[in-house]
Amino acid sequence: MAGDGVRPGRPRHLARARGPGGRHGAGPVRGGRQLPGLHRAFDLLVGEGRWEPRYSLGTFPLRFPHPEEPGDTGWHIEGGYLPEGAAHYHTNLRSRGRALLMLFLFSEVTEADAPTRIRVGSHLDVPPVPAPYGEAGASFLQLGPQVDAASAHRPLAYATGRPGDVYLCHPFLVHAVQPHHGTRPRFIAQPPLHPAVPLRPERADGGRSPVEEAIRRGLDA
Image 1: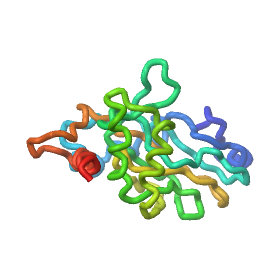
Image 2: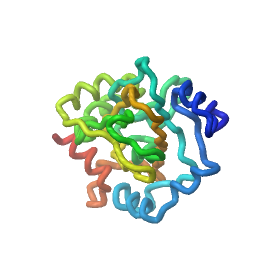
Image 3: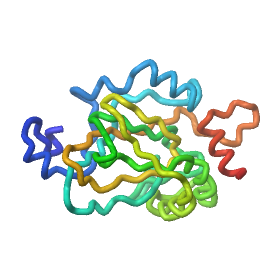
């Protein structure tokens, strides 16, 4: 991560560094994404043959202790594609470009280490929000206030754990970062699992994956 201004063994760099980090697929991070157990979980959640293997871990949304408010703590869902001319990533009812939201923990994360906040069950509240936007979808910034309001009643959980833990989440899970007022940096990777074929929550042949079934349930609620 030296290209992002972080120097191993030089704490003063860690104290100053803030922000999302870069995209990494080399060095010590390469071994985290091709475990057979993960592949079996992908098959169970998304469906065999319906997801694309990953060869990098995408962005690292790093959090370092800092007294200032980060200004990016709003509740949201992730976008999966960037339309031509758009400034922000979009999503639609089929969660185009994203079959799962994944969180790979590379440091110990307790409730004192600014873990990702999660609204449990919120993926069931989200489908009616992007539905009116059709196949074109809308940006995650445009959808953010709407999914926040739709899921405000849900209980709160924290993505805590040890290095090597992985959270596999529905792409419509409403989540948010938080200020880091602890004492040690938090290192996680947040890559999407890309679909090999579009999600089809309207499948009528009994072949819906759990991800597709949740979207269908959210629409029918």
